[in-house]
Length: 103
Picture 1 (tube, helix red, strand yellow):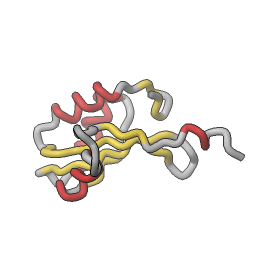
Picture 2 (tube, one colour):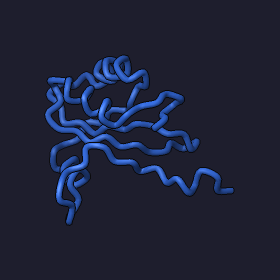
Picture 3 (cartoon, helix red, strand yellow):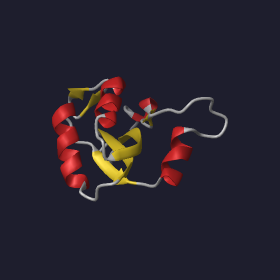
Picture 4 (tube, rainbow, N blue to C red):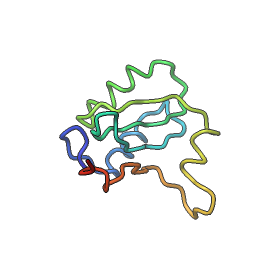
């Protein structure tokens, strides 16, 4: 997938997130911003309060700076494992491919 002109593989993003010791739970969301550009928003449950430093550190490893949002496990878990799903999804693509060329 391409985000802000950089090719990213979901497995690489997940590996980088697992490398952050302060993060206890997370889910990665690929979404479109107000201008229709792809962005990474990552909901994290973390013991640190300095998300800006963590964004910078993760951004250096991914070559794209994600938007980190502090969230509780109660907020993250239903997104990771929706009702009826058999296994959790750490990476969720919320972009709608059909709206790219919509007038």
